[in-house]
Structures are given as structure tokens and as C-alpha cells.
Length: 155
Image (cartoon, rainbow, N blue to C red; front, side, top):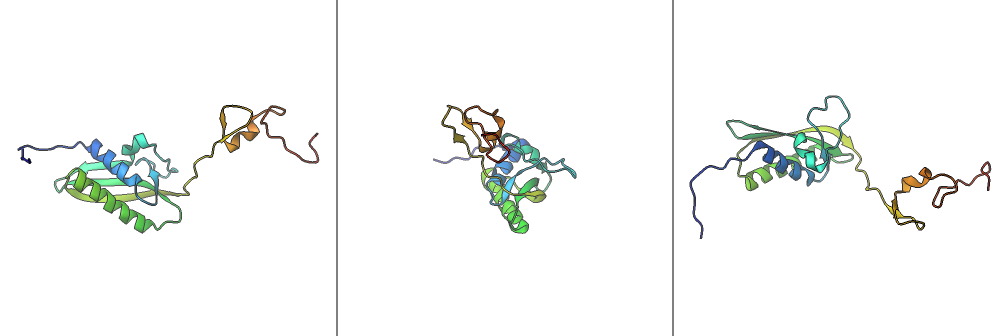
């Protein structure tokens, strides 16, 4: 049972920015989003709850114009990733929000190597987690402390 109800649907630009940011993170080769106002500075990847700072959505006569500020993974083809990103964002906006699209512009602000997630290991002497980089933070002689072995170190 389908019926049409007359009326207009207005979607806020912030909602569209959230949709675009989430769609961008699903694109292969995109490491993350960065703020639009990082002129000349090193790009800082935004956390997932602040993605809209990396998306500028403007409503025009022709439709919605979207500017994306992204960080691309080192070793990927920038043109291919950008085109895939444009296609993904266009698909998300036209199918999900039924918004006429005036254009999508991708601004590649930085290129980074995708970092591996920190591996956490459980030390046998305690119930808390340590990352591999925490070994040198213990004082000498404590359980689990890193003990360098060398000629100039006392046994």
C-alpha cells in the first residue's frame, strides 16, 4: 500500500556532511578526513565523530555542491581514488537523500602510510594490558621491565 503525501523534504547540510563523511571513509584508499582549514600545515586525521569538519556542503540553484578534504593512502593512485570517492559520494547523496548534486570536488590534503593498529599483549605478571612500546617505561628490576643485556650492563 503506497500513497504519495504532498510536501517537501528538507535535509540539513550538516546531515548531508555526515552522510558524505561516512561514505568517504568506506572508499578504498582513503585513510581519513582532515579539516578544511589546514593551509600549509600537516593534515591531522579527524576522528569519526568530527567528520563533518572535513566536508563543506553548499546549497546552490543547481543542487548541492560538496568539497571533500581527505588524506589518501600512500601507494594508491590518487586519480583513481578521487574518482571512486566522487562516485561513492554521488551515489550516497542521490540514492539515500534524493538530493540533486551540482558537483563534488576532492581536495587531497596529505598522503600517509596507513598505520597498523597497535597490538596489545597481555603480560604474564599482571592483569592489565601493555603495548609493545611500554616495555621501557618500567623501572629497572620491576616485573615485566625491559632489561637490556650487554657488555656494559651489570648482570
